[in-house]
Picture 1: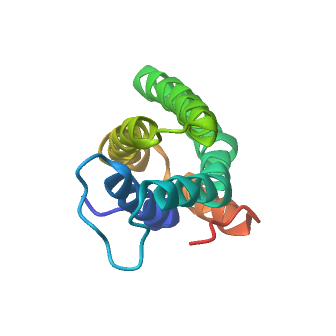
Picture 2 (picture 1 turned 135 degrees about the vertical axis):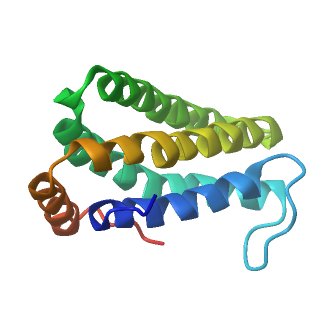
Length: 153
């Protein structure tokens, strides 16, 4: 299914999040222009979280989720799960910051981030496109475009 224009900016940000998820999983290949050592990946991941994921999560939690939450019980349940995953990602970053062996935290974070983004893209966004009216989608697009929470990708 084609992604509605209102959700395209979030989907674009998801692409970069998936790239990070692949980079930090155990056994990942090297990516041109991206960190190669564990210490470089650790620093890159923390910076990416602070500059990109925090603003992205904020847009979802303050703009997208409130607009979509009361549409049906399945959406409400998914949103609750996704917010919990946002918190788990933040907690993993906190552990990563103090870790002396970041391989475990990076791998766990990569797997969680990958599954989280795919759930949003494949499940939640598909439903949102179906349950929101065109007027609501236009408002969503404007609200996401007006935010100063843009990702620095």
